[in-house]
Length: 106
Image (cartoon, rainbow, N blue to C red; front, side):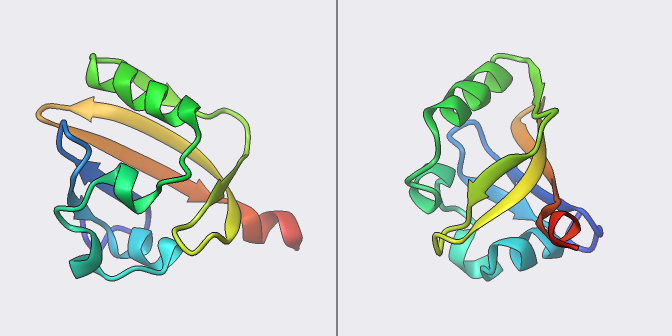
């Protein structure tokens, strides 16, 4: 998973990071040792309530995605546009996103 060209993260049922791809680290400008074992909610304290609800539904066995572009802040506060898909793969939750900010500004 680390070397996949997609931005992918895997969290446990408490939303603590287990694995992230290199692309995910690049997108969020973080280092692996900064996030493995950390809570997604601590890393993204300004996460919209809607995402808390999405993750809860996924942890109940659902699959979610954002069909529309979504403006999302990175931990440094810089926003970027992306599309997100989140799914449960027991015992973890897996998130995948495609950054579209660069495509939108060309």
